[in-house]
Amino acid sequence: MLAAVAGPARRPGGAPCGCARRAWTPPHQRRLAGQRGDACPQARLKLELTESLLLEGVEEVIARMKELKALGVGFSLDEFGTGYSSLAYLKRLPLDQLKIDQSFVRDVLTDDNDAAIARTILALGRTFGLTVIAEGVETAGQREFLVRHGCDAFQGYLFGKPGGVEALAALRPRDATAALAA
Image 1 (cartoon, rainbow, N blue to C red):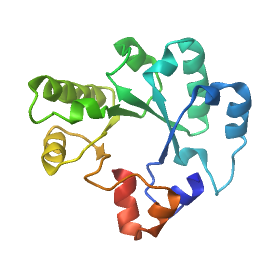
Image 2: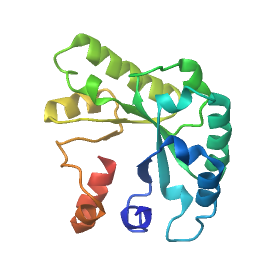
Image 3: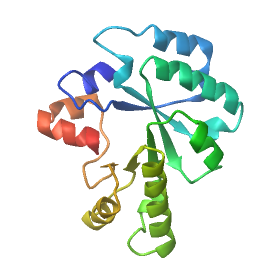
């Protein structure tokens, strides 16, 4: 699937992939380490971690992240700010990206607290040299707010409904690039 979504004609930023706890077991890690070649280069893969993955064995998770990072795999912290966020984790994890949870994006134009949280996550991302992607962007107003405050990328119904690889492949190359950035 990765090769189909993030093939050579696609955006170089990588293809996101949700990461289950089992992906952190040695057999799965060895399998990923063995995925060499042009069809599925690790440098095109970005694993999305949730904060709940960090609740148990954070030292082990960090060690495995560093091993995979050495192979070129990127990491995104999904749903940032909704669980057990710790700035100590943020400074120690070898991350590439933060994702603003849709619960903060939804009311960013009408709720001062959500707007402040979104701006803070964007500032944290800039401070730590991370790209920031906003989830659940449904209106042009939300997108404009996020752009104005330095958001790097977006996901949400404003750009299209979720679909499989076939739906992405059916897009024209320019549209596919926009969908990957979204």
